Image (cartoon, rainbow, N blue to C red; front, top):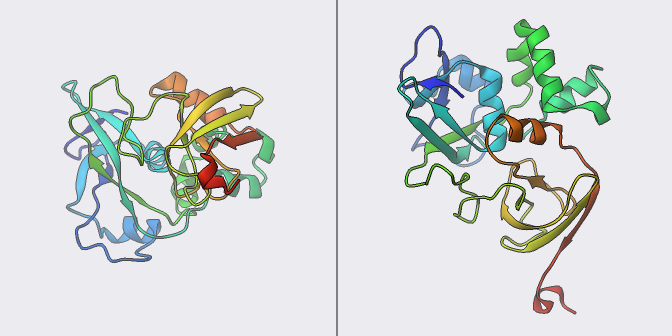
Length: 230
């Protein structure tokens, strides 16, 4: 997304670094952070749209292009310890659309039609993600995953490490995907043995593909016999 190192009339939404003195356990909610100004002085950069920032927080990484052409690469630095609540689930509960039709594009369309209600919708999710600048990564490489290596489009899987070990190869079968992937990342909303997120890549096409992905299917983690007890 486009952004600036300084706040101005076009870029008013801050992207925050994690405070050094952040306490362990639950901290302020998203709403409390934004209303209190508790993170003033911790801005990495500024962007123009709060929904775009929200999606970047859900994804855990992103890129901000400055007016001079430079690109700031941002990676996950931490979170406020509050539970995650899906705004898609919130819109489903409000009757905006059936669960089977919910997607990122549906959320964007709703936001465009109800700009005055976007802020209150985002506050339904008390979780808040902090970022850090990522240096030393080649432009063509993907974000850094939980294993400390760049993730690969349509080969990297984010899983719950309590159920699938990091680094394990995982065979995926859905209506749109049948391929071998690798568990290289995690996410605060990815809980349980039967949930995973596919990294689709960077850019508008990848974003559209990821935003529409809501498939049921099967996963097979391929583990050494010593780990299975067989």
